[in-house]
Image (cartoon, rainbow, N blue to C red; front, side):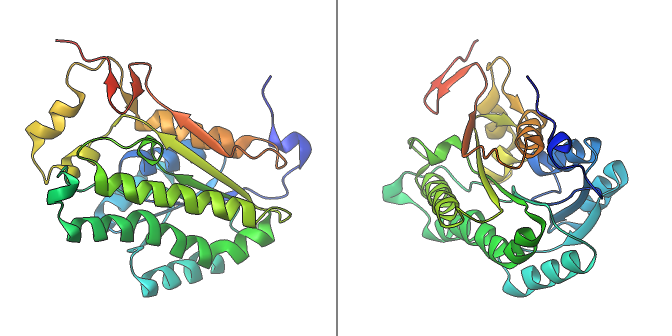
Length: 259
């Protein structure tokens, strides 16, 4: 049975969502999915040229901002709040860098991953929380199955995503009794244009090899649909944690890969 949130709370205005990491991949797909579902969207990312394309396709408002910068996030929130209520914050911005073993890891890469995946997420959450409280809104954090199970070569990314997941869970506990939902969506293998390319420092062949022979990895649109669905549920329903993997993937290390 499907639930229609509008049946419980008839809307007096269009709902509005802020989506970070919106210049490509899951973020861009989420902007498109929410726009198609009747949301007004604010697409946030560092790359103005990519955001312009997202705006053209979806009608999104765009804000260029680096979530690792206090000043940028303060400016982002001022701009967003000045132009209307905020019903949802979807935190997609993040990413992986490198595949070194822990014993040989590049600590600067670890620091960058923590800054983006954890501190960038919660810097934005903190600043937007008053507006979300006022709108009885929702916070969605797109983490990863890397936040559930470690795997070799993933130490820094796994550590950052575990931290992001645990902080999200802590926030959920701390906001019980307040009119804000906190939702964690953890995708497994998702084939996007940039995730693995960034991880492998721009090496296209190594990035392509990640998905080679895997029948049906997730696409960005699959994760975007999970976000859209959790936000469409009646306000009393909180999807605490949703793990989404392709059928071909049983765990980070158990994968159907064919010749």
